[in-house]
Length: 181
Image (cartoon, rainbow, N blue to C red; front, side, top):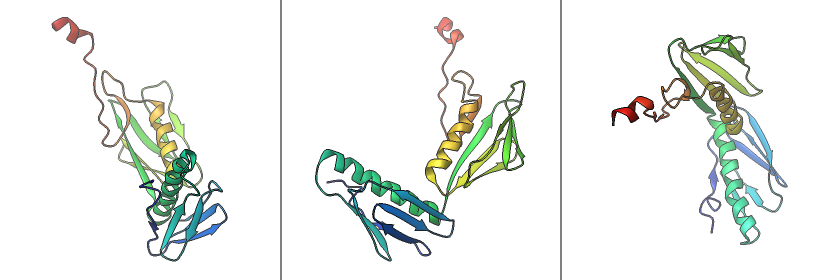
C-alpha cells in the first residue's frame, strides 16, 4: 500500500479542480495549472477533495500512484498559495540588482550575469544580497532557483557563492589544517 498515494488531497477555499480523463486542471487565486498524468491512474475529484487510485499492485503502478498524488498536491498548493525559493549571495563584492523583469548578478567575474525569469515566475530582490524566486509551479520555481545558484555555487573552502537561504555549507579545512596536525 502506498501511504502517500492513498491520502486524499483536500481542496482549500477558492480552489477548483477538474479532471478530464488523465488531465487535471487546478484553478485558484494565484492562477491555473494543467498537467497530464499516467492514463492508467484513476483520478476523481469532487468539491472538497481529489483522490488517486491505482489499477493493480504492480511495482510500476505503485511508483506512479504516489508520484501522481504528490504532483497533484503540489498543483493545489501552487494555485492556492504559490511557491517561493530564496537565495542569498555570500562574499565580498557579490551583489544583485533588478534589471527589467530579471536580475543582474555581480559575482566578481569580469562581467555581470543577467538572469531572466521564465513565464509564470517572478524575481524579487531584497537588499543587495537576496533574491526571491516566486511562482505557482513548484518545478519551474525550483529549476530557476537552481539555475541561479549554478552561476556561482558555494565554494567548499571559503563558503563564498550563491546559496539557498538556510543552506548549511560545510567548509573543508584546506592545506594548512593538514600541516598543523
